[in-house]
Image (cartoon, rainbow, N blue to C red; front, side, top):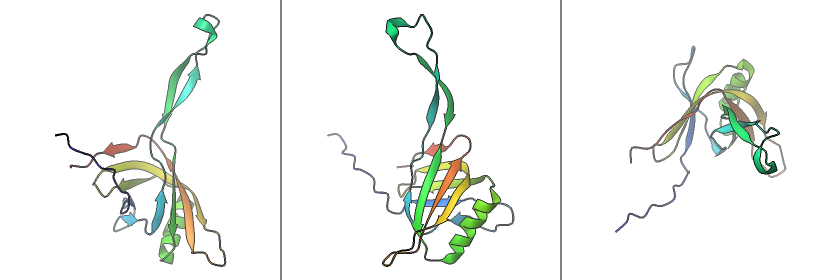
Amino acid sequence: MAEIKQATRTMGTTLTKTKSGQETEDLKIANLTSIGEIGVESEEIDATDLDSPNNYKEFIAGSKDAGEVSIAGNIKDESNVEKMLALAESQSIEEFTVTYPSGAKWVFSAFVKSFKDGEKTTDGLATFTATLRISGKPVYTKSAN
């Protein structure tokens, strides 16, 4: 009988920045409510010429771009705001890891392209958003399961 695979929940997924410089430990980006898409997209190069068959455009793949990862979270500890703001100010490329509860991981280099303190409303929470701009190739490692 075939094994039935179940969908994987994402509750418990983490985002961590690997220590660098004077830091003594990795920085876990805490209290996240979402981590955006991670993947690869190829640019397209138009290779259409006057001899292209059937009056259709032709394309070839160009450079690959890993894009951006949007994150959002709740502010429960204001030191996280200071740390994220410092990363945005530094503009340094750092190593980040997204780890799923299964143990699967994405590891990529990125800089904090934007960091914003969230909107304030009468019944809202203190929140933040940020965008990580990936530089180079992200690496996916499946879980050992």
